Image: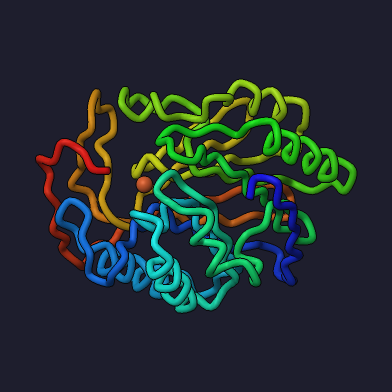
Length: 278
Ligand SMILES: [Fe+2]
């Protein structure tokens, strides 16, 4: 999987590419399964309802990992069906809770998995940070090599780049989550620093919003479509904020406009006192 190299050309004519990021849905094997008391099918559908109300034109959907809670084929089949509601091509990343093998049983013959999505002026890179059997993330030589080659191409073609990961490449101030960040983040940023075209880095995993910046590059993390983790926590702690998603407008001049939207009209059940989950 880490060696897979595929590029998808997005047929797109408008000036702005409207991207929606949906992340960490943690769907269980059967519909109605719960994570810390929350029905993750119900919460995903509530987020999709918000997207459909708020985003009349979606050009592409980025699903940045932990689509399934236990990596079951049944959950990926349902996830794919849910995404069809948005009427836009979706692209998947693998998270630490996912199973490559079972995702491929659903996605092998589709463009769901690709390393690069291209428009006339943008390149969106999907890099795999999963380390099989581990919670922590790492890119490794393969993905770093893909990144370097893709950014070289982008420099030649004068494309702007958005780089997507599952795990976070920076410490976010949650001690327990910071232990899981991309192990070779230093190498990752060294590659980015060699190219001027990278405008943003986008990830999931941390179930909370981050909007930061490094050397002019936007650093963005987003709420899960199910449970939220409390910012600034030393150890595992669930937050009472609602599920949500992120939208991004990629402009031709390289500007990214972005925002996070959370579900406001639905109440969710969640066990706030939980000490963790597997
Ligand atoms: Fe997650």
